[in-house]
Length: 269
Image (cartoon, rainbow, N blue to C red):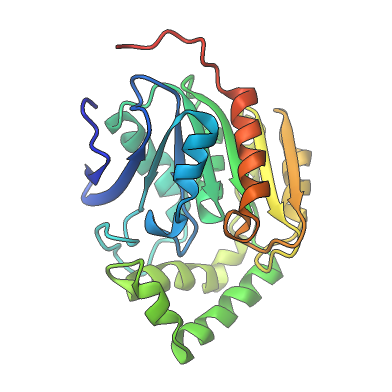
């Protein structure tokens, strides 16, 4: 896509998705595409995209999925395979729309799961690695318990007001994610089958005190993947190490980017 503005909206499918593009455009440098968490958005990444761009020299593209940030709302209830839909239907169109030529996916939580599904279902020669922050490959008790707790918090405290800063339709964002994860049928959600088909290096960053998942997720990746899996456990961090331990998280992702991004590819002017 020529002349990708620094921020704006992309029309993908039936949704308008807000985005930010930091640094060089996809036709002139590798691109790191950032996939946010289940309650995330472009804005909730804070200054991490800018810092990642400065540390790597790559372009950094962040967007809000439908139902989040300033993007179009999602139809509720979300289908329980909503992450598969994002990975297999939306993300391929988005990568083509921005003119993605080579680079990485960096995903957090739901976004990490989406990145893993994409990499395991698309043999995309443009993709050179995936960095997964607090990924989910299966549903654990700790995940469901914490997600049930946050529903109570959302409905009884000022959490809704805080999240409303980041989402145009905060109820759509919250209940779309929360409702799917608390559906009893979601306990059977399992994307570990995709891991064996990933053909690019993987970096996994897991907070030592993650309240939404355990190191079992890392063990599953090590058991199922044939590709290299580099694991960084970040002391003192919970579910959002890029906010709770930004220096260590940035260093780990930047080192992974340096090791995996091939900058010797011919680039179009």
